Image (cartoon, rainbow, N blue to C red; front, side, top):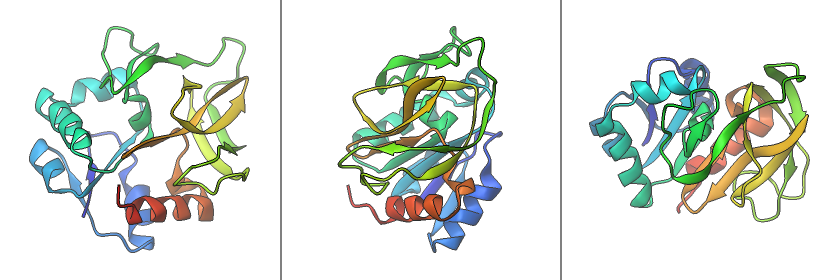
Length: 197
């Protein structure tokens, strides 16, 4: 069962619809006990970094880290991926989960923000979620981005090159919204559901 964490502002309905369409068993969970029931975890995210991190109790943060450390496959979507890092310029005073080093950045001041709409990915070799060597189009809606990191499995360019997807063992993250990215997004979610990390 995939545990989909609801922190009060995630785009849950479209995520639910996508999981149902690919035939996944899932449950919307709101606490550490719910996270413990999942054989996989999805943290969808929309909104403000500080608001999301403040809404996660210490018990939930600890559970997320413990489950990930135990090898449970984890997928962070949009803000859910940004939460994996140490901090964000959106709320510098609020710590992220700190699973990866680095700070989430805001697009340059002259950029049109938020970056919304379809954009092309440059998929790196070895990706397990995306077909490597391809340049699929997916849907984005964000003003902050993860700089290029060693764990990046796909890059995107919008004013700057940034991490559009990352993969590190059992941890996966995407800046785009697979639930709004048509067949490419459906295939990606299906691959995550079928993973045995």
